[in-house]
Amino acid sequence: MSLKNTIRNVLNIRKERQLPPPDLKPQIGSSIVRERLRIRLKYHITAEQWDWFTDHGWRVVDMRTNRREYTSVPDKVLVKLLDLEGEAREELHQRLFRKSSVSKLASSSRAAQVEKAAKAAKLEKQSKTNDTTADLVEEAS
Image (cartoon, rainbow, N blue to C red; front, side):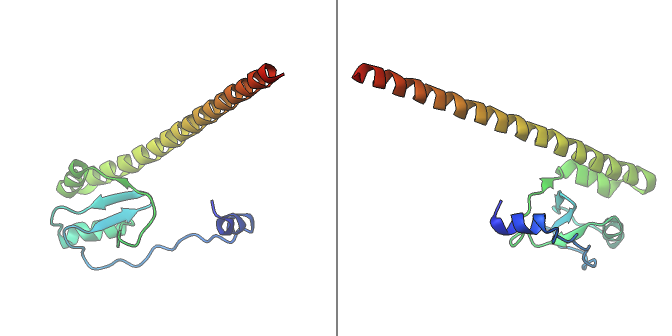
């Protein structure tokens, strides 16, 4: 983390991002995002479907200038969202966000495990280096 980010965190300068106003219906190939999920639109969507997405907080984002990390929603989930109506669509949408929050927790715990393993490997390497150095000192004396 950079010094600038650290200072902003310590001084609590960070502000919650406001939801931008909805755009016009996106073209095929555009990306729409909500929180940390991204959908790449590979299929035509109707005005009604786009209204539903915008009502649920999805917005068009230019991915060329966006450096945030997103989890991609699989195409088959997008197709199901587009095909379903009413309550069934709402239920699938809720399950999508429940699953993403669970996978976010799992990935953060996996990241912690990887970091812990890396630290252990580094300590082991340092101890081997120290042992080798001690052996060399003994041989020299």
